[in-house]
Length: 101
Image (tube, rainbow, N blue to C red; front, top):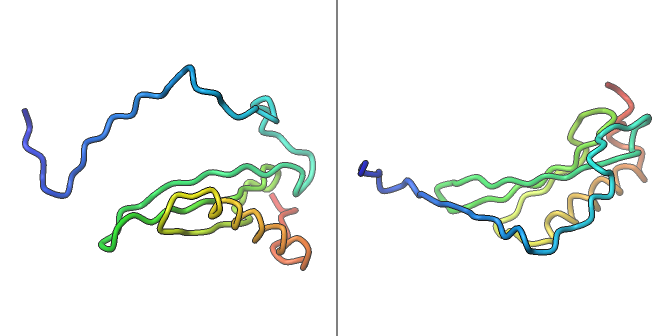
């Protein structure tokens, strides 16, 4: 057995294949014909000296660019929704145009 350093963490996640899943609204077709037609979201987490930081990104599929983002110290639904609200506000104000490829 290999010895781990104090800061290393081993984790194994076994998904529950019987659990209900959200509906796939785009049928895995990640293509768009114009800006702001389809956004996708992802989030990740980063270990810092102060603890975990969670980051979510909203990506415009057409432009293939991050068009909204948010960070949080907790992995709650609200922080993903905050990133969507940020993008909606940018769209309303005409900021962060995504029409470029």
